[in-house]
Structures are given as structure tokens and as C-alpha cells.
Length: 471
Ligand SMILES: Nc1ncnc2c1ncn2[C@@H]1O[C@H](COP(=O)(O)OP(=O)(O)O)[C@@H](O)[C@H]1O
Ligand SMILES: O=P(O)(O)O[C@H]1O[C@H](CO)[C@@H](O[C@H]2O[C@H](CO)[C@@H](O)[C@H](O)[C@H]2O)[C@H](O)[C@H]1O
Image (cartoon, rainbow, N blue to C red; front, top):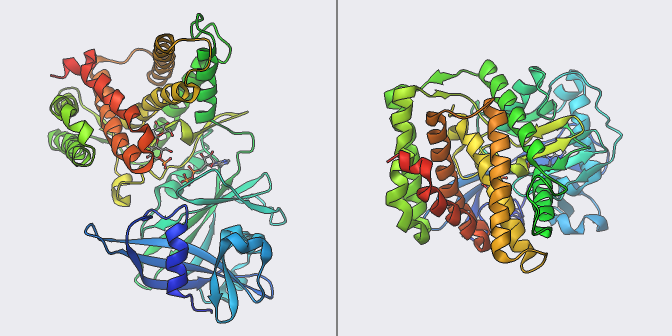
């Protein structure tokens, strides 16, 4: 097997869209390679696990997956994916390489005998027995950021996780459980790829799932509804074309059904006083962490504290159940298909350590995530439109509030099957505040121009009536 060159990999990572350490000094501290079984003459396909060590004060290490295809001759069409010249041959990021990604899919269909002939720590697991259309043309999707997904025709999608961690990957784990349970709200899982290390650990590398070809991104649909509203200065949300409320209600129902299936198939638990306290403490610690990084948050910290701490009181008095949830739900994680809403990407918040992302949590974290997303959609459309459209700034702000409120209500009522109890309102408000605090850090790091969207939400939340009850 070919030996990867560290310096080439360091250079490749530094500019890769999916590399989380962009801008930080780092070095490649370790490399392990494994061959992908199958394939044709002239192409060597391997997976390289890259251990990255950060050289700044924060330090730490991370593990990345880099699938590499190696060709004897340069491939002009793969130029943008070129990694380097190794032992006189040409190495490319394999997710761009059609022949390589076909080999990757074919490995799922190899017999046990064929697989046994290759000495590799890679294991290709199937879920269900659907035929895999190995003749379909693979194509790298361009829409996403943290991982890489390759579509095979209109049937299959292979998601290759870039930043990986030993242990179960929640995206695979939850898709497997929901698929086996017959859930209508996820793309069916067809398989996954593991790396079994010499130390007995499993690193999950990729998942193969149904490609939702009729799916429209919920984030785009919601913004287009908000845009239609702002075009008409004098009409209410329910009077203009493109009203989103019935979709928001369907989303609420889809989430409620998904939570019910997850509660049936994973352990659930009623939080005791210590558990409730620990949950509130985690939120309070996140507030302190966020305020250290976002100076503009500082002014709200004292008023936010009781709104987060209330989780412990409510849990003690009224009880709160925890269960597996999505963990980072927003409109961009939803696809509207002809068969209803589907939820994608169960990996949880990227900033959290993997083991924390599989912790059981109150369902209100997901509910609050969606509520925040309605606010984002209206805020982003307002700034996209600038001075355009029929409405003045004040009218637009009024309409935006109305749009958000209408969709929040529709979503919440459908989720809860009616009005929320006062305790549920408090929990929901606390998780909304927690999410907005997290978003302040997320935006400052990734989209500083949007930092005032969650900050404005924090200001509104500390001033709201529900929050006042918490004090
Ligand atoms: N099964 C699927 N079929 C079609 N499109 C999908 C599917 N899963 C995800 N997508 C699209 O790809 C985008 C990125 O997927 P996601 O799982 O969130 O990847 P990442 O972890 O890289 O952010 C989603 O926003 C969605 O639009
Ligand atoms: O999709 P990811 O799992 O990578 O989630 C991260 O990025 C999201 C943005 O892409 C971010 O979501 C925030 O912005 C959305 C609009 O782009 C908005 O709809 C969400 O409500 C808001 O939280 C998410 O928080 C972050 O973890």
C-alpha cells in the first residue's frame, strides 16, 4: 500500500472546507491507512485516518478521515482534488473521483470470501437487503459543510464523516434505529462503514442511505414564504401566498412522531433532583463559556441565569423525562418530500464532544431549535431584502414578528397536541435561551455578520413574559 506524505496532507487539510481547524496552527501527528476492497487495475483506493495536533494555546487533537484515490497518471478532471505526488503516483481526494466512489459502493456488495481476501480494518455493514445500484454515476454534493456526501444517481447517498471519533456515531445509530422501526421521517439507512482499530475501538466512517430526491430544504422553503409576506405591506401572514403555517404544523407533528419512536427504542429516564440540577448547571456553564467569547452577551448574563436555572426547579416539581433526541434541529436539517417532512443529520451540535451528543435530553432542546430557526428565517430575509419590496422597515419588522409567531404557534400546537402547560412553556423558553446563547458563539466564529440575529433573540427572551415567571 502506498505511503501518504504528511506535508501534502497538512496542506490539503488547511484549505479543505470540512476542516474544523482552519486558521489554527496544527501539524499532522499521525497517519494510518487502510485499503478499500475491490476496484480495478490502475486505481488504488485507501482511507487515511489523520491525527491532527493543534499547536496553539488551546491545543488538543482531532481525527479526520481522508479517502484517497491514487492513479499512475495525472487525472486532469480531478485537478481541484489533487493532494500530491506519492511514490511517483498521483493522490486525490477520493470523494471527487467517480471510479473511486463506485469502488466504495461496490465494497458493500462484495461477498464475505472476497472481503476476506483483503487485509483491511474496514468493515462494510448492510442494513436491510435493498439492491444497491452499483452502476449509477456517483457525484459529490456541494451543499453541505462539515462532511462530504456523494449521491449515486437518484437512489443512494453516501455520507462520509470527516471529523471522526472512536465510538458510535449518533447519525448512524439513530438512522439505524428509526429505519428498523419503519419511521416515515428519516431517509432509510442501507449500510455503514467502520474502521476496527488494533486497540479494539470502532471508528465509524460513512453511512449509506436513501437519497431523498424529491426533498426541498426546509430552510429555503421557510425563507421563500417569509419573502412573499414582505412583498405585500398590507396583508397578514395568512392572506399572502406561500403561507408556511401548515408546513410548520406538519413539521411539529413529524418531530413529535420521531421523538415518540426514539423514546420507544432507546432508554428514557425521569430526571431526579440531582440530574435536573446537573442539566441546569450544564446550561449555566455554557452561558459563562459563551459570555467569555462574546462580550456583547455579558450585559444579559445576570438576567439569563434564572431563565436557565428554572429547568432544575421545573424538573424537580413537575418532572422532566430525558430521551435520545436530534440535538441540533433547525430548518436546514429538514427536507420536505412528496411523502412529508424528513429530518436529517442526527450528529448533534458540532461544537459538543461526541459522547455528550448521545446523552438523553429533554425533547424541548429540539423543539426550541426549530423555534429559533423560524426567527432566523425571518431575520435573514429582512436583511436580504434591504430596502426592497413594498413595506417600510417598521412594517417589515411587524410582519416578521407576525410570521414568526404564526409559525411558532402552528409548530408548537401540532407538536404538543394543544397548548403547552406552564411548565412546558418554561422549559421551552429555557432551551430557546440556551440555543440562542450557543448561536451567539457559532455566528461570531462562522458568520460574524449574522451575530446580531441571536443577540437580538437573547435580548427579546430576557424581556419576555415567560422568562419573567422564571424569576
Ligand atoms: N438523504 C438525503 N437525501 C437528499 N439530500 C440530503 C439527504 N440527507 C441530507 N441531504 C441534504 O444534504 C445537506 C447536508 O446534509 P447533512 O446530513 O446535514 O450533512 P453535514 O453533516 O455535512 O452538514 C442537507 O442540508 C440536505 O439538504
Ligand atoms: O447544520 P449544522 O449541524 O452544522 O449546525 C450548525 O450550523 C447551523 C447553520 O448552518 C446553525 O444553525 C443556525 O443557523 C441556521 C440558519 O443558517 C438557523 O436556521 C438555525 O436556527 C441556527 O441555529 C447551527 O446552530 C449550528 O450548530
